[in-house]
Amino acid sequence: MDISGEIAMVTGGASGLGLATVKRLVSMGARVLMVDLPASNGEKVAAAIGDQVRFIAADVTSEEQMSEAVDTARSMGSGLRATVHCAGRGHTMRVLDRQGNPGSLDAYSGVIQTNLIGSFNVLRLSAAAMAKNELHNGDRGVIILTASVAAYEGQIGQIPYASSKAGVVGMTIVAARDLGSRAIRVCTIAPGIFDTPLLATVSEEVRASLGASVPHPARLGHPEEYALMATQIIENPMLNGETIRLDGALRMGSR
Image (cartoon, rainbow, N blue to C red; front, side, top):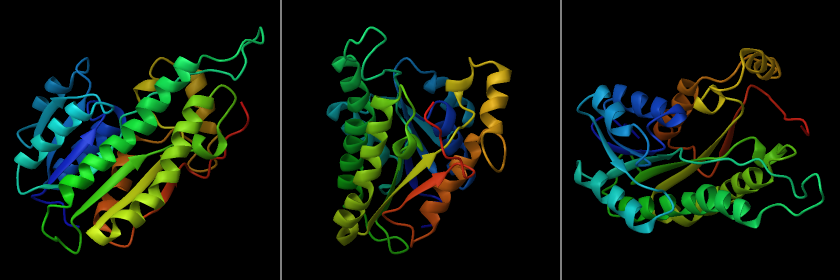
């Protein structure tokens, strides 16, 4: 699909992978709705990018707020053509703590709510909007979700995050098959270790060690490389139902 002149929506768009994706979509001529939490600096970031970007505050787990976001995106042009869902969260927790107490069910549920249920919420609402579109280059729309290599090789302490991202991987092929009759494609990107605000508080020594663990290129991934992958999925009509690892051949150890 040629995204130039079309409308795209990016969740988690005020920073990290989402922000890089917003910028790349704009550079390709798209108009973009940036979605992020009210506490983000999305309004300021969107204004700095220019008139092709509009910001709306929304929680991806809220049906009401995300319905409003999708309606806003549709109102920006002839219909929502692409959604890139980057919003998510993590939480470190073991099955049992050092004293043998069970991990917090509330903490686990919170990560599942944001990462998995939030992904389905964005998927279903985007798909409903895209189904109303006219065909464009053979597609009515493209939806890109975000998983993680932790979906395959979750480390000790990542049980909420890893299982939530494994759920995203699991829904990808099913959603693509489900929406194929409506000419809507669905893919997922599973990033490895990327240089995002999540790592901003980590020391340079730790960052260097993380980068060195990647076989090639032996460094942290750049958010712009995620954005490049997202737009390549949008452009390539045969990419559908696939979860693409973007990790420099990294395979995570147990810790």
